[in-house]
Image (cartoon, rainbow, N blue to C red):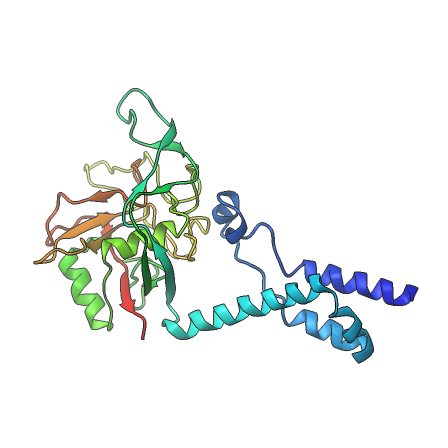
Length: 296
C-alpha cells in the first residue's frame, strides 16, 4: 500500500507539469510578454503510466483530479490539431466572440505634459467593457507580417494596393479591421496584444533613434524572431510596433484602408487605434501588411 501511494504521488507530480500556470490562458500580462505557450506533455504521462502496469493504471485513473487533468490535456491536443488543419502552416486560427465596440479606460498615463501628453497609456483598467453584443468570428491570419520569398525581414514600403495584390496572389486577402482587432486583443479585449499594462520592452516600439541624417526613417524593422513577447492571445506576432499594417475598414464600398499597430516610433500601439489619413496608394518606410483567409 505504501508503494502504491508513492507511485500515485509520482504520477500526480508528472501530471502537474501538464498545466503551466504561467500560460497566456491563465494570466494577463507577464506570460504573454514572455511568449509562453501552454505546455503539452500528453505523450509523457501515458508512457509513465504504462510503465507502472495495468493494475496501477486502473487505480491511478480513478482519481478525479488526475482523470480530469488528462482529459483537459487531451482537449488541448485536439484543439491544437483542429487549428493545424483549419489554417495553412504559416497562419493562425482566430476563433471566438468579438466585441465590436470596447470601452478602455486609461488609469495611468506615461506622460501628462509635453509632446506625448495623454497619448501613450501606461495602464488600462481591467477588465475592459464590451458596449455592444459580441459577434462570432472564425478566420485565419498570418502569424507574422508578410516576408517576400528568400528574404528575412517583412516587406516594407508597401501600399494597400500592394497588400491586396500580393495577398490575392497567395489565395488570401487583406484583413478586415475587425479581424485585425480581434487577432490583436482576443476575447479579453486587451488594449495591447500582451496585456493591459504597457511594456516598452515587449514589442519593437517606443524607439527614439528613428531618423537618419538625411531626414528619412531609419530601417528598424525586425524579423519573426524579434521580440517574442509581442504575441497576442491567439499567438499572432508583431501586432504592435515593427511595421504599420494595412487593413480594410469594415463595410466600406469602395474599400477604404486603415493602418494598424503603428511602427517602431513612440505611438499609441493600441489594438483598436487606426491611422486613416492615407489613401490606398500611400506607402512609406514604415508600412507593411499581413494577410487573412476564410477557414476552408
